[in-house]
Length: 166
Ligand SMILES: [Zn+2]
Figure 1 (spheres, protein in one colour):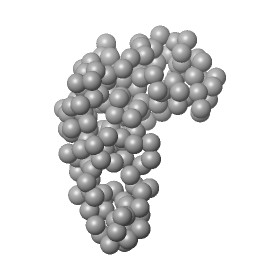
Figure 2: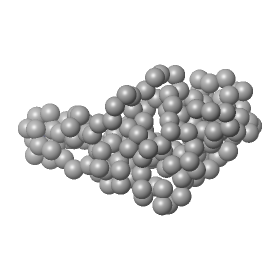
Figure 3: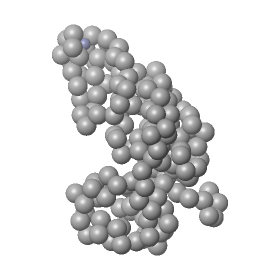
Figure 4: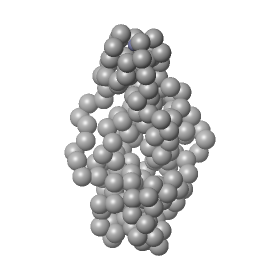
């Protein structure tokens, strides 16, 4: 990452990075809501800093969603995660995240990314959603959901679904 690059920050960076490092970075609105639940004080401070609160374009959401369905990452990703990847994608910004699914998508989209504290992935992969009981494979959902697909039950046998590397 070189000086002057715009960064899009995942929520762990907002919590753990020194405030002086956050200035000028981009985030999405829903992160403020998430942060308010976690630490109202931190949320207030974050809002008073010079962060750029933005939203991704509809086109970038569609593009990132398409890739996330292909890789299977969609089954484990939140709306905020998807928005952050799309925002970085549309702005040509560096995505800062420790989330392996978001890193995986960034790799697929040939975007620049870095970890918040960890080194991050060194390879990309694809996921399949499979029942741990009968082994039935499920399609990747088209959109993120509030309820993680992984916590859902198999329609055939009632066992849990798990994401596995394809
Ligand atoms: Zn089953």
